[in-house]
Length: 364
Ligand SMILES: *[C@@H]1O[C@H](CO)[C@@H](O)[C@H](O)[C@H]1NC(C)=O
Ligand SMILES: *[C@@H]1O[C@H](CO)[C@@H](O)[C@H](O)[C@H]1NC(C)=O
Image (tube, protein in one colour):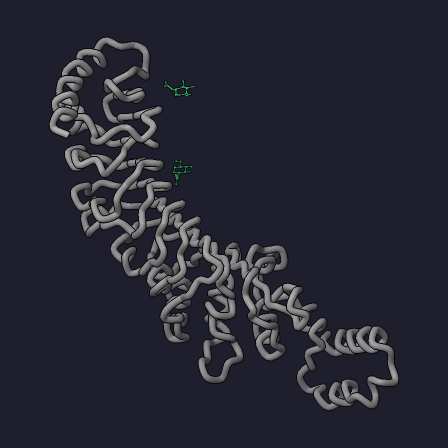
């Protein structure tokens, strides 16, 4: 280690000279590594290091102070301790490096705006502290080995706009509602590589009402990407008597989440007539042209009784296919569904007939 530090120091001296003269933007910069470097007044870029670098070189104290952009993809074998010396960094890309979660510490960098830590073997959300959080707008933690997240970690990132966490084996998300409160968050990708993802504790109706109030005053639209979390477990059923959530609040939430995808391929969440009615009514009352081709409409599903078909949660046809009774026509349908009547009709004729009847009655 000491030997390498000395080498880095010597190289730094040579590089200073080299950079002052060189016209070729990229040049070999660190012996015994394949690294190519390019240093300008405000930006420092490494190429082709292939995870051979143990630390960041310090070329010249003036450079260190001026650099605001550091691009070092696939560069490091560990956390670069000298990173703190580049205290003005705003844009930092360490993706593809091999970082040890417990050593990663950004609290020394108080100007960070864009941080890319994709594919860095992280097992937990790194420490940013208050200093490093406050200006952060884009954070990429995708393609790591993070198994659980507590969304409270992001609370101090009050300027965060995009959060990428996809392709982590996330099995547990705690306090998801914290993310909905970040005032500038526009998109977050939480698509886990795990088949089962738990949200704990589940978001209460009261918390959703607070979110709705916040979103209504700021006209939020929010792109959320989820997989293996049923939409029905994210939001309380609109008709549930135990956990009421007002229709107005539901409309605000659905409108804000219209471009989101909540894919539930492995869920065993079955389609239930009582739930479907509530969801579909609310959805059809959203006054937006694109609602029936929206990402949310396409992705939110429930499982039909055959155990195979995923039907659209917000689609009226699911209600019909499930032969759900229409409200106020209960007597008629119980008559139609009675075995004595049904036995007179072939299965297909019965199903076709009941669909037509339900169609007629659902044109209210
Ligand atoms: C990095 O390596 C690739 C292929 O290994 C090569 O094509 C490219 O020119 C190298 N970049 C620099 C700046 O040397
Ligand atoms: C992060 O870096 C990876 C490449 O290592 C790139 O594909 C990805 O787009 C970057 N993410 C952001 C948000 O810039």
